[in-house]
Amino acid sequence: MGGFPPELQRKFDIRHRDNVRAIEGFSFSIVAIAGVFVISHLFRTAYHGVRPKGGSAVDVLSSPLRIIRKVSVCSFPLFPSTGHAFIIGTFIALNFIFLFTFNNNSNFNLETNVASRTGWLSMANMLFSVFLALKNTPLAWLTAWSYERLNILHRYSGAFAVFHMIVHACSYSAYFAGEHEPYMLTKASSIYGIIAGSSFFILGLSGVFLRPWWYELFYYVHVLFFTLAIVMIGLHQPSIVEGFLVITILTGVMWALDRLIRVFRLLFYSANNKVTLTPLPHGGTRVTLAKAPLGALSGKHCFLWIPAIRSFETHPFTISAMDPLEFVVKAHDGFTKELHDRAVAQPGVQLKVSVEGSYGTFPRPSKFDSVVLIAGGTGASFTFGAAFNALKQLKEKNITKIMFIWAVRHRSLLSWYADHLQTLGSDPRVSIHIFVTKGRDALESSSNSMTESEDGRLDASPTATSEEIVPAIVSSASSASGDPEKATAIIQHADLTSMPRIDGYSGFPITWKRPDVPAMIRGVVTESARHQSVLVMGCGPSSLMTQVRNTTAECIRTDGPTVELHCEQFGW
Image (cartoon, rainbow, N blue to C red):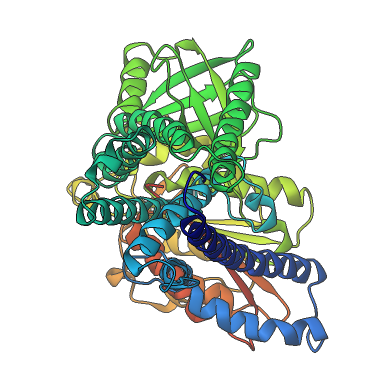
């Protein structure tokens, strides 16, 4: 900034110092919030490693943290949880606080100060937005929040980058028009800024309107206009001495480096790698890879690249099993529909493939005494993966009991994971509870019940009587810690004619109703001692996850066992 009269230059210098102070305060506040989560994560990790028996200093210190977690994990309108709402509310407040803090309105008037400040805040928010979107984020190790769990923060910081840009552009345009200097908007630096601002605006619109409608197109628009915006911002404010260009370069370098790492992995894991596609009932596709990425774990997710279907796209899917690496994909539209169509047209076809990942973080199930896994529909990819991961960590140890709850709409969906059900069912540490919510009437119209073979076909077999089914349920439930579902024990004395219809699938009882998830979670927690720990993990539609969140929050008590919650949710 130069070429101005000394008095005017002095004013610019004062405003620049004020802007730098404000951005430093904004940035340090964000970092401080992140630091609280890092410390909290480290403490909780150490606490689960110690497993105090009660009365220790660590145990006493955990009480206030439990109260905080009890409140923070509850669902909240428009947000996944109260904790999310608090963080985002704090973030919004910081944006407005530092918009008006450190403004010397006797130096320049409020209009021009706001115009200048919003330019800085727009880029600061863009920097944080890019950092929160990094697939290879250091926060995954420091806070146990991987990029997909940070996505909501990424969206809000991106939204405020666009908001500040709009205020920045409108304020300066109004100022120059009021000063009868509209020609200032025709200078090269201003034109670069207008192009950058337009790119920001398109990014914002695409996130709101295009992303839910056509994700693939949204992705291309996002990459194209973000790249254009970063280049134009660099040309709009090219002075590295003033610091604005430093933010721009740092933002671009972070984004580019993350992309290069991912491209390198895709190229590396594409060597001699093949995928086998197998069609499943109700639009499912089993995707089996010959090679898995180093360090991949079931329950996490990878980005899949199949050039024969989409040459320039990768798509995330949860690892349902390892050895071999397996994904189970439900067809919707776009890539998943084309994937299923190819599997149906050419069952067992092998295609060239690559995979990149794995991503995702969740607590170590082996650190807990009891684990409750809850899935709705294809959310079972996560819970099967988490169960296999837990058993792999436990090896032959019998210190953790697992309750596996799975609710599906149609019975034929069970065939998607038939082999996995058998694997879990053979382990005495796992109790399996299967619920089917649709199709009961069709079965009751026949004198025989319908059992389904692993290839998805329905075969007739004699209907099991209520007297035969009840002991099977009680036996299955008893393998969990204590009595995970109190209602199950009482079922022996209930009126069997009023019970929901129960049939079998590959030796597992099926209950034809929606599961009483709150009762099952409370049962496990109630039967756990003060010094024990319970982990609740779920994946499914938002209504189910809301139920899981609120029930788990109710179970967190200062005088009860340690209760942790981890929710995966459809539609990242």
